[in-house]
Image 1: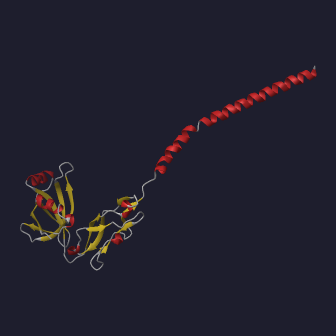
Image 2 (image 1 turned 180 degrees about the vertical axis):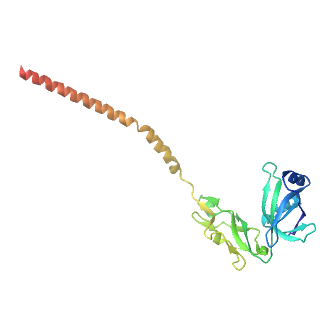
Image 3 (image 1 turned 90 degrees about the horizontal axis):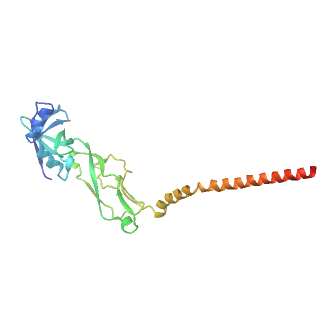
Length: 239
């Protein structure tokens, strides 16, 4: 594994103007904290930090911080801010690392292979969770988890508990039943067409009251005619 070093210097000035001057000089504001020591404000080499983030281990990389006038310390990137337009680093938080103390980290999960549920059954492969959280010593932090999903069929899931972890070194913090990936069924065309058919039925529905109304009117006219006929017959008998 490649050894990374980040050069740093104590930072006395604070504020936006001081931060801008630091960035123009190829440095970025940073804070080193954690462990038994007090937080230290510093400026660090921006290119060296960016190189760590682009490495295979990414933010889980353990590197050496060389501070002028201080003892070198082991650290990891805890947090960082990036300019939304240029993508340039603006600020980083560094966490001190003790190689004999267990810590919690998040590790990415990557899959490879074409699932049987996609190739043979016409399903769709979905990645649900792309990283898991675990606890271990700094030296035991995995770079990533690569899992072969070729055997996944429709209805089958890859769960956190399925990852190859050494229980003697690594403790899984993420729920073991958390679904990481699965193969699902495509929705049938009939199910998609059903709402359209329902909408067409709803639009045609208003025609029914008109027919009922028309029938009611004819019935009323028939009743009125019968009443008139009965009235005329009654008058004829009186005469």
